[in-house]
Length: 225
Image (cartoon, rainbow, N blue to C red; front, side, top):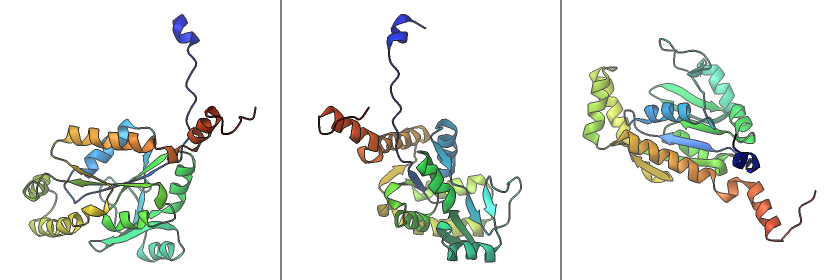
């Protein structure tokens, strides 16, 4: 370590409340790719594991991809206020248990939500809505979206047609989101996503200790030793 580095004091850690990062898009717009990359690159954010009534797919693990629940148990959790948001998609129920989200935000960690417009709306209208930021990912065009769904070769033609109808309904809610990104270039879209998170984390109202330090320096209050 150089003498200059040794004399340079470390910057004090800035505390802040955690954020609820809502990421929505129609199927095939690239939301999952962006989410995985963000989670791999950013230690300040974790993925919100949802509960669902759909059966597990090959390779999925309980508590990692989803908490798999029978419909009666899921409905009980909703009735008893244990879900931050929930929705029915393609005949299956999906929802976010609220307990882990509360704990993460209290510890200053951000939580990423991969939800549709209904889930995003419920989160924004919930008791934790003040800490939510919402981002909608659009494909370059409807034609490109359909091409991507066919290229994945995961679904039958009738399923793709149903997903396209659902995509149009999903995209009709774009104006409800604070940020809109168009994923016509993955690198650019990812850079824009990271820029949004950086700016939101630096907001004064998310960092109460900054306001206190500013008052001390401006002489409004005196620091207590």
